[in-house]
Image (cartoon, rainbow, N blue to C red):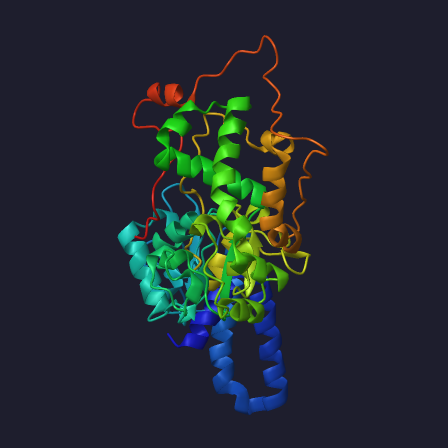
Length: 436
């Protein structure tokens, strides 16, 4: 299928009503301006109209109406022997596809019900996506994903990997890395400049730090993780504060970070900072560098908190830079990568049957000097992406974590909870991206 027709079909699948209206308007305009000479191009355009309108009818009424010469398509993309619409095992109409539309591509692009994808095997799904995308890869026809640690990146890499699309960890970086960060993991290394057609996810710095502590301690300091307790407990906060102070001490002192921050984390200013002899590095691991470094290279940003829904929606997801609303991440993935992508499950999720340690309650009681350092290090992230700053306690010294209320039952430690789980269940997943 030619690239322009493929793109039009993907657009029709993603935004059926708009695609249908545009196609009809364009066809009317073409007939009016070109008269009888437009017959050849009109035939092609009418096929597009049929595809778009058939899809809209399918979405609205459960069955696609294709016009003259329609071919029923089964879930696996094969033509049915009879002339009726295709039906699933539960009696749902899958619909008809216009005869002018290549059958295999039509099934892959979801011109039947979206449930078609769920019924396919992993092998079939990847084969269809590969056929649709051809030679397109991340950075070469597909958007480049810039992975900011602890913002849902492993989930994104796994969701796209499930349909055979490699991004981030699952694909060689299609950009030149920023020199000062070459020692980092490639998929966490910021680009040297703006990357065209790229995107990233940002997250509330406080919540990002909480997630990092739980994730990292679960494998890097298992004794710390095992002694945490679900819900609020002052011991949780003490362990979190100790971890946090150690994680950002280098960032607080880093001349490179200070130089970046003075310049507002612009690409131009960071290049100047990188060239200075005293700018040795950030003084932290990749998971703690300010998000603004990676975000500066992204042409589009999403917020983790309100953009990671599992169902498509528009005008519900915040724009971190300009304000206002935009489509959410799953709608973006289906529009720009492939409609078969799903975000139905997240990777490295906390066990939903177990309450998380309540680390959000720790910030306002934290040692004011540690909180002040954290706020300074991530000041640009907080301001640039629209997150409120937690103020340190005035004229206070040291931590002041309140005890649990008298008479309250003390929760089991996470280690004790883990020992009571069966069937291979864990308190928190700790796995890498599922690239295929």
